[in-house]
Image (cartoon, rainbow, N blue to C red; front, side, top):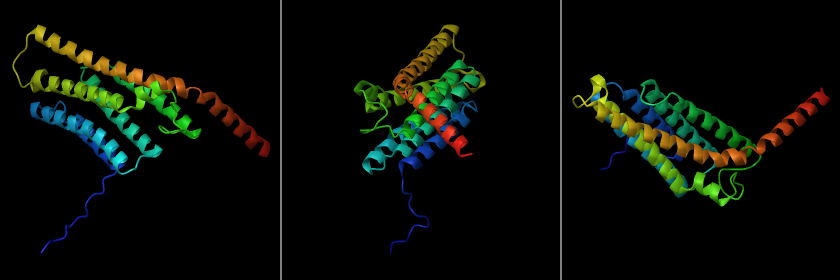
Amino acid sequence: MRCALPFPSIHWTPNKVTALRVGIGFAAVSLFGRGPWPNLIAVALTVTCIALDALDGHIARRKNLASPFGAQIDILGDRMIENVYFTYFAVAGMVSLWLPVLFFARGAATDFLRGLAMRAGHSSWGASAMLQPSWTRALVGSQWSRGLYAAMKCLCFCYLGLELALTSGPVALIGELTSNSQAIIRIGGNVLTWATATFCMVRGIPVLLEGWRYVPATASANRGAKLIVRGAA
């Protein structure tokens, strides 16, 4: 005789997967710096977190659940994860403080312009997409671009996490390294982080260029609305 499960099965949606990966990302960052094995667990959770970023898109396409609101939730999840990781590594002294500042500023600017485009009736994809030229769509929204950016972030976060686990002071898993070895490892970390930041900025350029044209129109609409309100008063 088959017994019913005490709890209903979870109906996974892209937004639920996004919420899960944000939670895993925060859990991973909370484990960094707490010892060698927690650091390694944090690295494993980081890989899981990045893998879930691909899963939510797969579910959205397979179940036909893609929507402008879901795209904004996905972007919000990306912003939260990027900022919490780079902020932690900046506080730990492993990356420049300007790195999380750069990611925050870029994300705030592009999200603001996307919001203006949505108010004007433009979505993230389709015939009414904000980005019309094919090269901008390929650079920002194509699978190869999103996949490469996710892989770069995963490699960057995991590298810094492994560096913390293997070489950083009392939480190291290996013995003392020579100054040359430490310098080489540090150079590798800097190359990865700034390469990721550069690609992030390059992917944001089309959004900045295309989105800026909605600023004057929105400002004019707001001025017109204020005049109407004043006239009615």
